[in-house]
Image 1 (cartoon, rainbow, N blue to C red):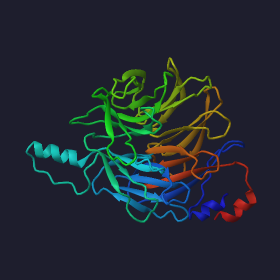
Image 2: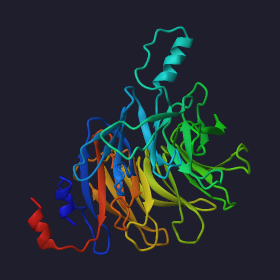
Image 3: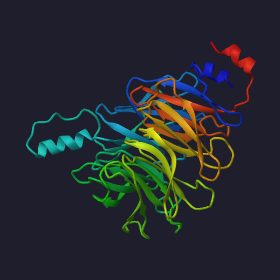
Image 4: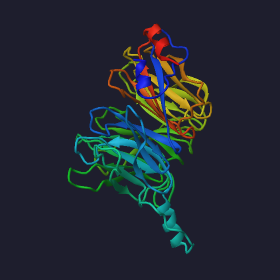
Length: 403
């Protein structure tokens, strides 16, 4: 297994403080030419294996093993993209990439022109949300399709089957105006052969200030999925109850108030069969979980500052849900081992590489049955795969392949 690091052309880095029976994380880092804000995993070259997608401010890259040479899938020319998710946008059976802009230069250009101010026309395509069509080939750009031009300040995107038709839809937030400040919406994935995503507004102006990241789960167990939101502007974690119809009103419910709230995930943390919420304060301090349905607060890590990335999954294979996070301020990556009842033990994954992070996702990247982590390195300008390997390995073989 350790030979994989040489196959990738990357030096393996083993996590500190690994214990027998716990994951052994091997770090594989790929340098990139611009700040990386979000990552995803899709099969980009039709070989049946997942590849690493890294999204910068202007470009989206595909990194394909074994060479991991960055292949540009799109160059939008203008800043600033901030988040991406995978979605079968054209219903052709493969996963495409949806990207959202934190600032849309075209919206700002039109605002300036309407105000009678001089403004230079942007150079790239006019979109606030777009999707890149997976052609199954790298080495050439993927077609870019405009999904929305009116949302602005998009910090988070997520997917889920909102209308219950068996196909995942897209959810997005919008921080800024002019039309959709502090707003949330979902976009209905069109039927195959159609191109237009219908926008359904969840709230226009009702979010708490700066909606960041989202999740989708049936929190009240009524058979309809609900939207979870972390909002740094209001310092709130909220969930939005879906109404009975596609255009019904969504009802806002407060989970908790925490300074710097950003990331949120639904998970049954204590194994009681009820949905709980895991959350982190990426513009503040702390990682927590809130027991549903009353949302009693439990501390996972009270002291970690800037945990602006969050993933949930069974990382040690013991049947319960663990938590992982990364701090761009403290420059570390960490996972928390769940005892099955909601008590967590912290284990550091990466503390020696001064690794920044702005996005962290859990995925079985190599198809070995264990959940790995992929990370967007922000100002360290890299994308990282933390491979989850068994702790027991041949130490003599490791000595032979390591420099």
